[in-house]
Image (cartoon, rainbow, N blue to C red; front, side):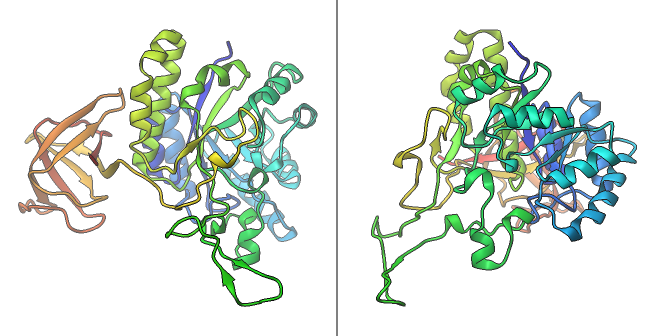
Length: 410
């Protein structure tokens, strides 16, 4: 059995550290240019270097996305950007690229850096994989539209040292491998340049050709109709099938997600993979825990996507585009002191006297009581009312650095 990598997204330095602490083998991030998530916080070169050092010290890798489709005006800047990445004291472990022009620049400027081919390149057959392998790519990311049997066919027909990466969890795009023109057409913001406005999640009505301006709702229920609103991919119940297909890297979608989402998904899939490697019985015995935990992060209803054939109507959500969540992120512990106080930045409001949960990287969820709070000056307070407020909290059990605090919604 090939050793599988758990690859987790990060849109900020805080989230990168969370991903590594909670079980990622590798993290993929975007810099301040050429990434398909222009509205994520993304990484300055200084933050990138700090994040790479943090990951490398803990045995994890960092991949940098540069997967836009480039225009003429992007090429000179791309060459400068790749040179900057290649001169970092702590270099990325790979670049993720979809555009052949950027690929050729990266091969020239960063000859010793691995290149992975993004899902945006529509990688749907083994000839495509061998094409990229001959040009020097180490890994190719599957198109979202491939079934497990098709991926297995790819594995049987590509070189042994070539790696297959596939998305196993997260949001699905309604357009082929994410190459969408809806946002560009409707808002002038180009999804293929990193500025998608997600119009596939909007509410729609129908206009009949001979009656322009007369909008006819397509009734599903009182909330409206969401014609392109796919469910979220979740393959936590199908680790054996994914491994059998020959996939080398299990990729989680979500570079716009917060630390709680990343920690929850990373920890759950980490345990599922490790349990299966121990024995299939252990994996099956813990299935209810995986499903309960994965439900505590934001999601729409789950689907298995294209893995077991083309999805039908059950993979589409017709009544709402709202995400569900069974937990609220309160903050990540930055340090503790000799008095037993933990220091953090507020992500959501909570109060003295609340019952909350410490989420630990080893899989434990520790129920605790909020006994006291202090602001930065040491003044006692009953709650933390201000977004991003830095404060100290005393809990009935002392947390550790990098523990996450959350409230579980009953």
